[in-house]
Image 1: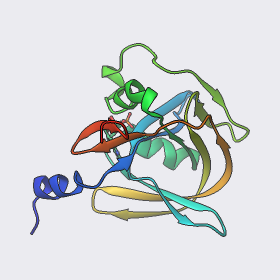
Image 2 (image 1 turned 120 degrees about the vertical axis):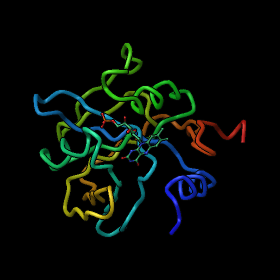
Image 3 (image 1 turned 90 degrees about the vertical axis):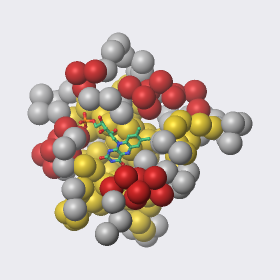
Length: 160
Ligand SMILES: Cc1cc2nc3c(=O)[nH]c(=O)nc-3n(C[C@H](O)[C@H](O)[C@H](O)COP(=O)(O)O)c2cc1C
């Protein structure tokens, strides 16, 4: 069987963009986590998915709310990517601003694109749940170079 470390090392060769998956906690406050498992599933109807580890707070908040936002980060937002990759108790300051969308989901200011998703299906596999969302709203920010993740590090098109 392929070990967890070998699999992680192989997947690190797959360059991705970086998103912040946003939702609301049980008090109705913004909660987010950095995620690169985001992908589109279908164009008609518009569906997207994100794979969320059972051990994250985000996992249960999405389960309870039935909705999540996906904010695609620009290369200027690396600090935000690092912030939301840490556990909540290790997050210092607030390196972002946000507003709520029509669906009531947090939109990170400066993101190059935002998608608001209503959970229509969830599949548990291994230690993650695949949340499939109907993309019910979206917004485009200013066009800017994306933040990338490759070989376990943030990078960008200029450095690549
Ligand atoms: C670039 C990057 C991508 C990540 N992608 C995911 C992901 O797709 N799914 C996931 O469950 N965790 C992912 N993580 C880890 C979470 O961001 C991390 O566990 C976070 O602390 C979870 O926060 P929470 O427990 O407050 O929800 C990623 C981390 C990084 C740095």
